[in-house]
Amino acid sequence: VQLVESGGGMVQPGGSLRLSCAASGFTFSTYDMSWVRQAPGTGPEWVSGINTGGGRTSYADSVKGRFTISRDNAKNTLYLQMNSLKPEDTALYYCARGSQYEYNYWGQGTQVTVSS
Image 1: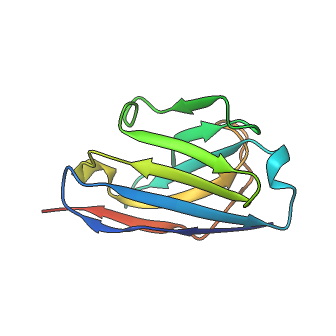
Image 2: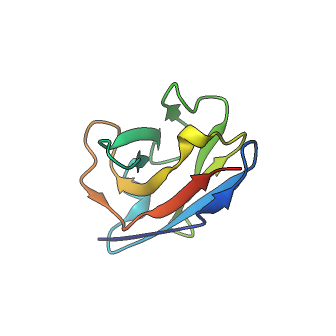
């Protein structure tokens, strides 16, 4: 199992970023997927999840209405569109295989920093 995140960076408050996660080593289309983040000094926080077909999505209250998760099973890729970013969104963002309560693999993460 390999999950490789990209798309992070530094952005001003109110800005946007789109994260991507390239998956390999397993049948991507048969797994629910999630995004998880971890800020310095805190534990992991589940951010968003999507089912195998992409028709059902869920979000943490802290990002609802600002973030959108999606997937392209033909490209084995997971996405997270992040809009209206806030300083409290600053964290290392991980792509994870599995749903909110049962993800078991994650990548190396991509850093998102929201600062003026």
